[in-house]
Image (tube, rainbow, N blue to C red; front, side, top):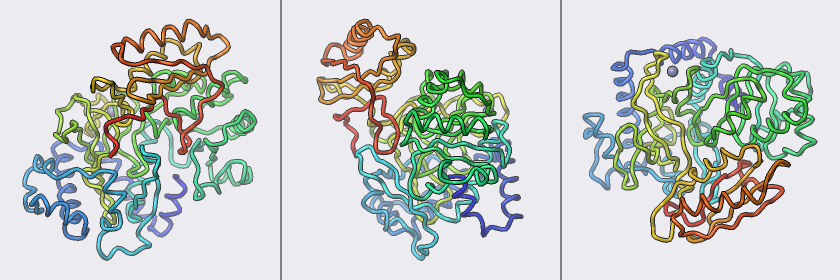
Length: 450
Ligand SMILES: [Zn+2]
């Protein structure tokens, strides 16, 4: 991913790259009032751009009688209608700013909750700030520009050329970058990658939390990591505490949480203190709303709404990405003024709807397994009907199957107040989703499918 951005940056003068990076490094320490002003100025700029140049936004905002002049105070922003994934799926081409050249659009796909990939456009002109945000992220963890990076990733045709087993060792060492496919994590592949990493010795290892945990477990049982990175970057899916523990223990390096998505790469990231995630407030606005779309106070958990200030080609304004999280009330002791958010706790589609209509958050089930880390290698809690939940467990050798099954059944009945029948199955493997990620909890009967 990094290299794709570097390639995109090849026409940008080096001077501009350096000055932008320096500026972005400084912004995180700005006095809060100044940062607030910057955020507000960028908010107004993207909204008025979208209204003036993007047919879909003009029509969407016009339908509620909004004009850019109505945006007088920051509170006014929350009156703008939310943009859903369904709208992006159906109206992406009308969201593109008039006069945008095809070459300015970078097409990206993300797996959606419905299993239908969602297409978005990135703005090629945003490559520079995005690359700088990536640098700012890893610099906070002590990783320097050009340090060696290993990446465990779901692949597409675009980045296959960087696969560690398809390019020469020389090229990996020159590019300081090696990529391993999260789709091909067989024992043989993991063994080869582990051997490779012991001589490559990366400073930074990036990967899906689930894939990285599986790899860490493999290493632990096969002689340990044999190298010590400066930082482990778990991304793309909510990170559970047990995953963090395994990865830190095996690699001997701190795990950092970063929040981003295919649609918008960087939202928020932990600093070295790891006391919440700093929102990249100079480039994004993050709001948290309830089911009706009303903005919730800091501290309350709800649906995440995000606005990207650098995509002028196909703007995403008040975009509901279907993740759940909350803004934090505290400022970080590191002194950075960028406001804080908590860890993203899951996806809207992880909400389980019970027969009486009440909802319970899938993460609740996940926490049960924290007490059984020694006995359970992997699990999935899958609601197949309102009153049926299938629990798949991949046991370790030490697993007391009867006890784990009985405890899961007892606790889960309690969580669901006896409304749901549970079936516990012990299996050898839990298949990944098409994206290459694991889903710990999934519900086929969620309310929010839009
Ligand atoms: Zn901090």
